[in-house]
Length: 113
Length: 112
Image (tube, rainbow over all chains, first blue to last red; front, side):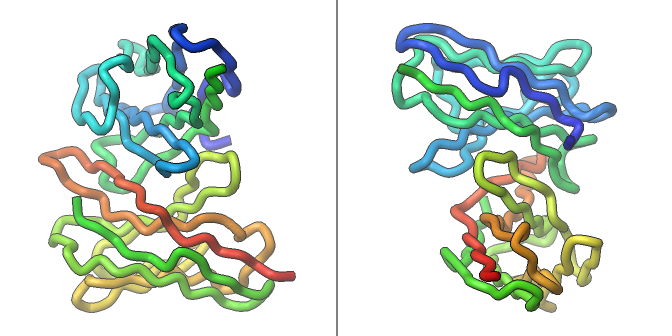
């Protein structure tokens, strides 16, 4: 157990739907990062939050959004889902700004049918 | 982002040492060198990181070239559980944020 908790572990939904993925960072970590991993794209950085504020944005689609709440847990919202959004979504956390690395969760596998 | 170059795949025998190379010729002075590994359907797992000096921990050793343009992850005695994709990453400082940009990594196969 890495200390980073992601729920749900698996999610199957239909095209056009909206889902929310949840991440609880390791105790004491202020930064949360979201990554998407699909078979042909590898691990792609989506977005980072630090203590409730967005700090960095990567290849995140406009249909996707995220937020970090006062208790530091984060949610990644995916809307108007397409087949190509099927992927593993990982959350990671770090104590500060990530200089010394991240701790990853075990991921949410999203299947869009 | 500063880039790293790794071999696509490597093979090793169980209980033998493994040296996984990584080139990062455009590394900047503030970039840390990180290594992660990922088993199938699992999240990446931190292995080791360093800045200038060689580093050792219970999992592995990291040897960093004097000019910092390359590094080598050393697994002293490979086991079957070490079979994974190994990523060499530079923690890019975009201001005060250290973003980890993953490449394709090296797929390590360990033969019994």
